[in-house]
Amino acid sequence: MEFKHNRNLSEPILRKLIPILTIIGLIYLNPSKILFHTQTWKTQTVELINENRGNHKVEFQMKDIGALGYEKRNAEVFYLTKYFYLVLSENYDARNFIGTDWKRVDENINEIGLK
Image 1 (cartoon, rainbow, N blue to C red):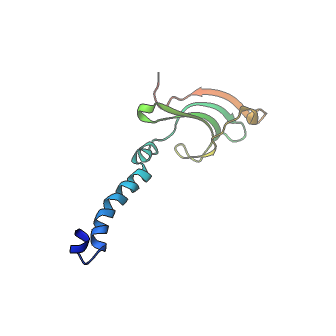
Image 2 (cartoon, one colour):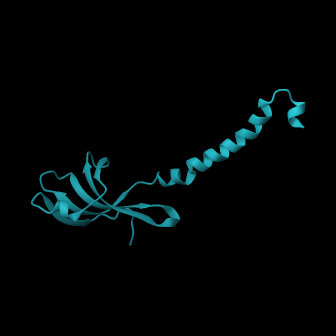
Image 3 (tube, rainbow, N blue to C red):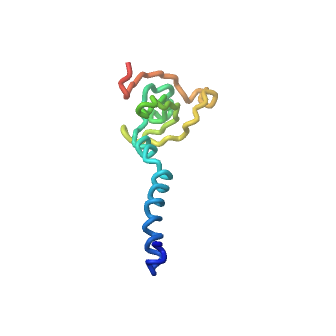
């Protein structure tokens, strides 16, 4: 009945299509993923330090993901300043760091504040 009454067929179709596209867009973007990506990685322990470059380290890091607990990783990082660093590798393998250049430190930082 609506299509017969209205000569302009695109208007009622668009009125019904906009909410459907909005719902599909929200499902695709998944707002909870956006919230989880705002958290930063916090250093728990510094495991290894490069003897030649003191700002090149291997760290155990954790990220709070809310009710799901903590995400953990061992990362090789290169500090540019005290607060800015580049992650060189997230796949830590102890066999790659055995040698004279790396010194085992196991320094506890605990930036998250866990007991």
